[in-house]
Length: 476
Image (cartoon, rainbow, N blue to C red; front, side, top):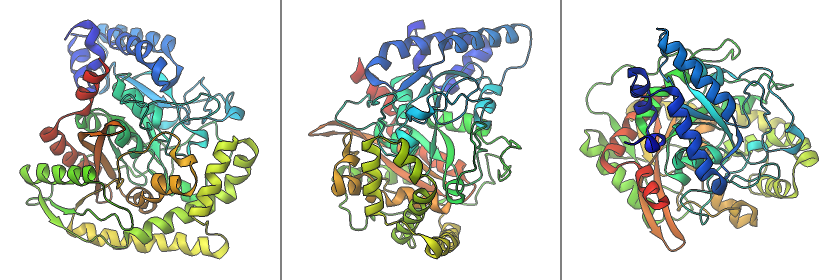
């Protein structure tokens, strides 16, 4: 690999070279910044550059290593941070004009932990207004594009993260997920991710002036979007380190106990009232075959109460959003985001009053039913979306658009409502009439066993390959 190709290195490959002395942190960071300069103007994935701070940080890491200081597990790895999470000295704008000068006084836990591990933040990535769309566009920073082409959305709300990491701008991209915001961009761009379960990654923004709603606290999680499963295993132990500022963090190791015998994987193609596209069906078959060949025991199942869980969960979240975020959306949101939320509220009528309390209580019923189910099937291979990824602005096109984007995403937000881990991994590129698109599947895991979901994703990746290699050939 030449110096000009250094940006292609995964996080694991970067660490191997920076810790051995074959590559300096400065060179790794310079390569990522050069790649950002080359491709980001067409993508608008990174909307705030941290180039000066990144170069200074890389030099400090190289000096420390030369002096004999120990290196961290992410030494010299270029990373990006989503603009809705605090990074000292930078605005946590959340894609909203009124927040463009909300400068973070301190780092959020994950930002602190990544930097303590030796990672270097090179930029901050785009999100939709209020980080509450499955597409990424806002009046403050504009639209993010998918590196596979402008015929397909980059996903949201971590669309800038998914677009940037797959285009080669940094090896790790931070994102977060309240209803699918890690998995939507992973699926759209052909990346890999795991949505951690409730309490796994400590979270808090020092710039916030009020606590989030209880359901948002329960459903929203922080994570990473990567190009390869190896990088999830490398970096997630850093992400889950304790931080006292999150009093509900669960300080558990990344790796759980080994399971006896072949791991049973529940397999389903159920998409309820939504049609299953042939290419999504093919993706599920390819993933099933890969897991079977890798020694997993794949069994067809009927998962319990999935549709009811998803709908109750999202309607409950909409009730909390209406009560707590509604006034700010009306006051500070663009006409586009207000219209999108009006359709959300129409499609997912918000629970209010005693109804929302009953549904928050019923969350335990769904979680218990799935806990029992996952006791027999530690993993579940299922669709993420029933159709190939949608076009940009599809969620602004009335009831049909919101149904395609979110209504059909039952397998996504149900996992947030129950607080279960769920990985997303690509299988192949489909050559569709509108253009090429990566296809992905979802793997749900037992509570606290994100490692099992990533192991299964790694088995699929080992059989079917990484999407970034195909993307970079197309990008030239």
